[in-house]
Length: 362
Image (tube, rainbow, N blue to C red; front, side, top):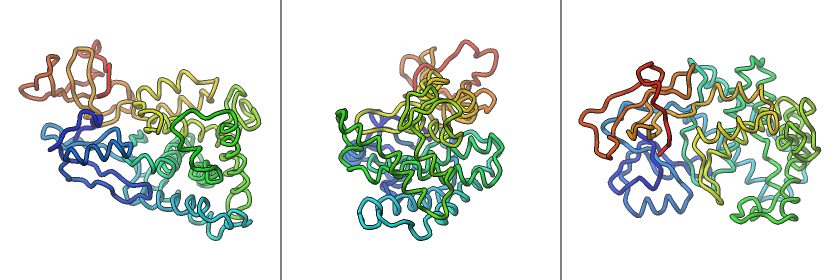
């Protein structure tokens, strides 16, 4: 399969990887043949990339960081909790929500089990979902990314659990913000920005009232918008004043937000997002944690369609964990746009290809 921008998809193409609704259910399943109507509908729903079947890349299959079953369970748990808090004001006033912590402990335990079972921790977030599902799928992605950093740091089981619960629920305070604000397509005014910023304290207050969620997990909600140089909110903390879990969640949150389509912009490619993050090291983010994070993220994920500086177009077929910026590419198209007579692979780590670089993700 190969991943393409929605603008490059055409009627007759066959979906190779399912697209999901906000609650984790399938919107468009694997094997569906696309029509112009389907494509228009996907664009309307905010889908900006698709995985498409292709005879030259049928053996190229991106490996998700976690199993589909694990993701579905996690998204459902987040969706149920968040929508309950949004829709039932009387629940917001309760001191503690029954089974709240136990539910998310079970969910994150499955995430860690999946991540721990991988031979190498190199994350490729290939899951596709509708724009309205961002809030719920984003929480799961942040938990996955935070879990990767926690494992790389050698956290014990309790540390991983506290980090993971905080990562899954870091944005729970957004349930207290009017939906028209956090889904607004236009720039917020000063008063709206001020109200939106309260979500960090709202989230902290919700989580710290739960008897089976730790205070350090609650601090992920409170501090995930603090910045390493003290320019963040709500308390303008800096450096080591920010809890390490919150510093990890901040990186994961920022990366997944950049690589996800939003109402006001298209998604950044993983390569563009990592460049942005690295430039912000030691101003927005802890540089040591950021370096660790970037060692475990696929800059050019498997199945990505890329253009090389030679003009050739191909699909990423393999990523070397020791050189994530120099993957193996299956060449499919000549510089003039014509298909190659016989697809072949080049490993950008090999000396003969050292002058070849990826210039664009298509």
